[in-house]
Image (cartoon, rainbow, N blue to C red):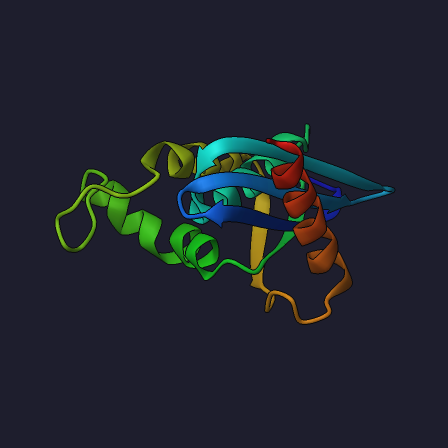
Length: 144
């Protein structure tokens, strides 16, 4: 594990559920921009998808600094997921975990890398967060 990579991710949704998009900026030796869209999704699903697609793009085990404006993603992967797995993918309220398949996929990629998660306030002028948001919104709007 020798590469250090910085990633910014964001999701967007018009209606919740509605059409959505996700964007990611991967900063290594160069900057790489990723984005995609779905026609019927939620904001949380797009936030998770952005992180999954970014991590999926990193081919070898790396040290990753991942910035998201989603407390849902950051807290879910750092705090909640341990109990979800221990409790058979049930929440503390004994309800099935929302977006379970996405959490399982994200957890798979997190095991490959050493990921440190950071929360950044959305729409606060952070250049790369704004860029990830723009990628997500543009992808969402192209998906008619």
